Image (cartoon, rainbow, N blue to C red; front, top):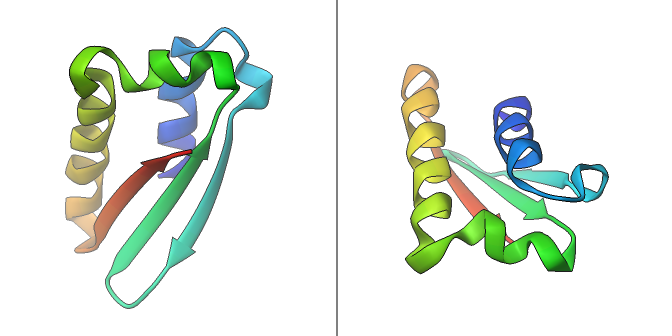
Length: 75
């Protein structure tokens, strides 16, 4: 899952070397914390959050196989 998010985000940003993902796991929930360069935050979120929503949709589709819930936080 981390590689999937990293691949998508690195294609969107101007500073791909600053993309960092941290994972926190609880019982049935995986939280991915995405760190990007401050100038790239808007590109990852997109207008009215459309890009972020699309990334979350792809993550949820991939997580269906493992029966886990996933959550993406953009920091």
